[in-house]
Length: 423
Image 1 (cartoon, rainbow, N blue to C red):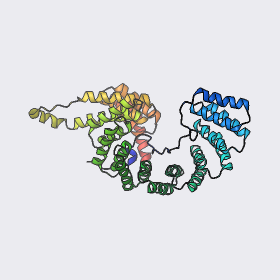
Image 2 (image 1 turned 180 degrees about the vertical axis):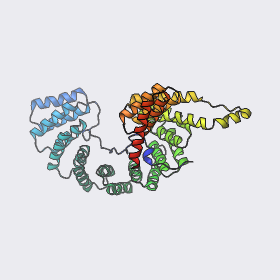
Image 3 (image 1 turned 90 degrees about the horizontal axis):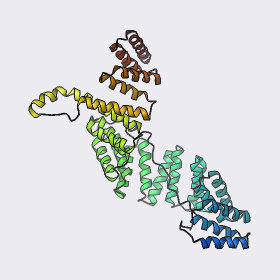
Image 4 (image 1 turned 120 degrees about the vertical axis):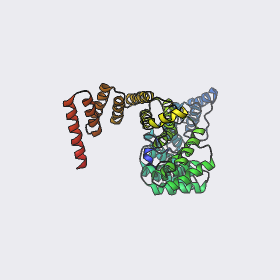
């Protein structure tokens, strides 16, 4: 089918790689979140009343509170434990984890650092402190802590993954790739690492490597919908339209409710001038994500482009209909009305995009709604005064409305802008 397009034209609006780190549970170590009987909490409280200076009793009470998801009470108990025993390294570690769960990052950083002063060989404390630095954007410090953790446990593949995330965020692409390759070398079935590798390759212009990485994910887990989606992105980057469509359809077969995939498939269909298919996909997107301005805009363009295509082949259809009774499922008017409705919806969601107003003005013009066309093009120019085509279109509208002086002014502005571009 058609020629390849740059990947940035295909991916979901504001698309960014999925680089969320896989984090160890933030709960207190060794404690599952199951309800402890009230009697257990009462017994620890009684022990504290008898001996309020017993740090272990406060620690155990914190564990009981945490099991009941009473995080504030658990934190208070742990704070008391380390006040009583400033060298209670386990209490510092668990307190740091609870601060992380509450997203109290500065407290978590200070508390985990205190834990490491007491126990420099704590893998979990180094790893969790790395997580805190990562969340706060302190990437050099995060790298240091993850490396410290890996010195203690060189086969901790999830820590390697998190280190790869930090390297990417710090623009250290080669280091990220090598770290993730080390992770899959230890665990060849680690799909998250293969998937992340594929994203890095794709975003750095290495589509062949990306294909291998995403294919490995689908080999390990054939129902990994996002891997099939990214295979589609990669195939389209390489100009393989059929491969892209097949991969998108496979992703939709697994997860039909991801608007990203429908949007990207709609883009392919639009580029290939399969406007009925594109309309179906973009309509699905706006059903799944009604506030998506880009999808409404693309839907409007697909309707408008379909109308243009219909007009281009109308003479052929008229000739053929005498023999085969061919009928267009949409009349020109219906396609145009659909385009106008979709563009209006796109403007309601995103009222600052001059391209949408420009296309709406063109649609109104085709529908002979000159006043509305003029207002849309005037709004285009208000948002972007240097939009040359809008000045030209507005000049034509003014001419049709008999506004000769205004038409001449817009045409003069159009020529000025074009001249500046040529210079």
